[in-house]
Image 1: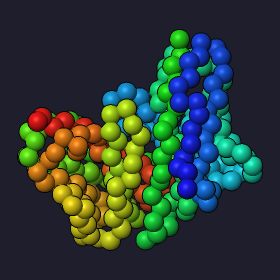
Image 2: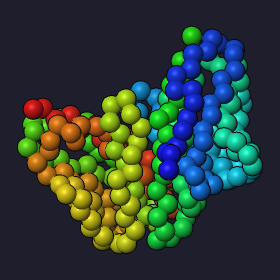
Image 3: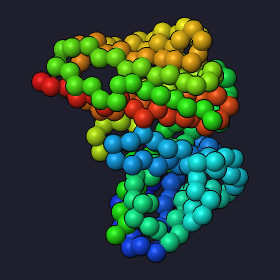
Image 4: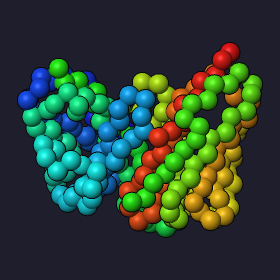
Length: 119
Length: 109
């Protein structure tokens, strides 16, 4: 069973370009989460999606950022008109169940991350 | 909103010494999870605690969940160089996981 896959692993963009980050969850997982991590910092929640639906996007900036998880294919985190401050590691995680399932195992399985550098 | 605080931010120990990191939530949690991230790597799930006062052990690692389900700790006995990394706690209520900022552990051989 392949783990969570993310690509590209490294992405370099110039200011003003678009960045597209892809995440394929583990087989059988329908819950996907995106996190952002700055160097020496913790993981900041961005968005939680379940197949074709955005469940919680409270951590995602209102402008320039969007996420989708289509019925077929990977989840995509899209950053338009990137700025230097967008440089970070972006991790995707998947789980078989959603949060709030009391007593249930809902650990998240993380992908290797995409390191985005904006020049 | 829910906040999860972790201390210390950094810890340097001699190999063989013990290590403890503490996690506190501003709200009662339905469960707490612990993850480890090696330098340059991605977070890897270690354990989930669900019950009030729960204690779980994994070899040299001991995890505790407070009686009020608002705090937790991870204790490593006799650290080894393979324990190097950042340990994150993550709390879950009815919202997606809220991660603490982590405790970065360095082990000096």
